[in-house]
Image (cartoon, rainbow, N blue to C red; front, top):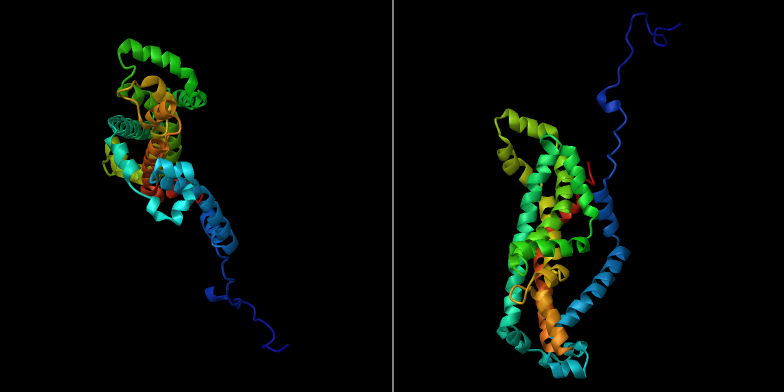
Length: 310
């Protein structure tokens, strides 16, 4: 046979170069990329726009009603202000801020919501880090107790805690309302942050310890920056829950420490459908959580999407 058609003994077979190999398959798109592609569809965007308009219509109606006189609200619907802007004025808000009871209730709400949110986030961050990365006796048993407290409804603790606060002088005070919100907000907060912190790679913590970092330094300089999305999401949920609460405040707050929700409920009970007071008060109570949500919106979305992509 010809030497061109045969391979001599001992000759090596040609080796395919790297460029001859089959191209690697592109990575499978993750949940976030698939969700982004789906939301970019024109039909989906139109549906979302309709849903947004449906949700924002009551808010717009409340805002326009809060800027109309009681006579205009009784005579015509709020939508007439769109074609007749002369109905709108700030008289209701001027009268609202001159009402010492409403303004005091507003500041009571701030004094309750801000400390209750800050304490829950701070304590839960410390506890979540301890349950996730520190070894101590009874860690798993204590964490199971914390998880078990998630199923305890708020109504069960109202009377026992009211008796306890009455015995120690906290009933009818702002610190009493704050402590109740902190106690019932901690189980969920610890559960959420512990699971989030546990997803942090162990190698990062070991490298920080090898560099001489103590637990407090690791917590402040590593855990808190990495856990910012979860912390922001927790702060939003806790703030909204405390700000909009009326059940706990109705029982534990007196007339001097009542928040805005209880004050508006009292106005409704005394004056019936006094829209000139209720509408601006309700919008004032609504606009603060909206501002807080949009201020932390980016971190909130990151917290919701956390863990969706490995």
